[in-house]
Image 1: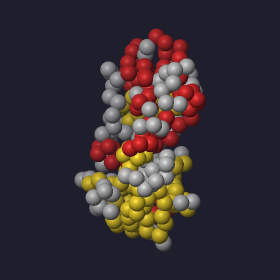
Image 2: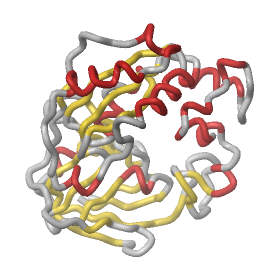
Image 3: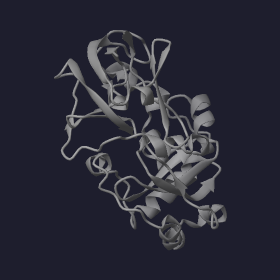
Length: 263
């Protein structure tokens, strides 16, 4: 069967292992059920997630024009310490920014390839950890706005990494660590403004992914260069589809691309 739709990141269900669903124009494909089956992915056209036009995607599913005007792509998204809604200062759309920034946020440790520090809205836990391919994670602080989370992350980045090595994550070249111990080492470096929000007695969350076989060598599927691909799906981790021949496809990287999926 053929399914066509604009790519958006897969939705997930936090069970063991994680369940993944791909929205193809109203048809939701349970991707776990496709593991060990041959599927094809073919590029059809572009469809900006904002304006809906067939314009080349620039970043995050948006065309160039929309990327530089949408409130969802302000600098504070990638750099939470730049958030200003708590000061009633607008970046692009103050109402949107208040809704997004003035809600509980969590600074956390996640272990996808190495231990890294990150920020997410509380409502996005554990979805954020799943999307990063983390097999374990733990909260450090829970603060009332994005700015406090941002300055905490900046302070902790001097003592722990903030990037995921996606190749190590996808080859499962990872170690299990005691994240509670790793978290405790960082308490001394939490900024004074965030110290009242430290979480001391929680346990790490463990996440299992539906992967039958991890690749030894990886090649990334680029829809701009390879507009039709076919392979046997062997697993899913983070937002990556993992195929038998070592090809991996980061669904989130290709948001805004209309594809035809053959099953």
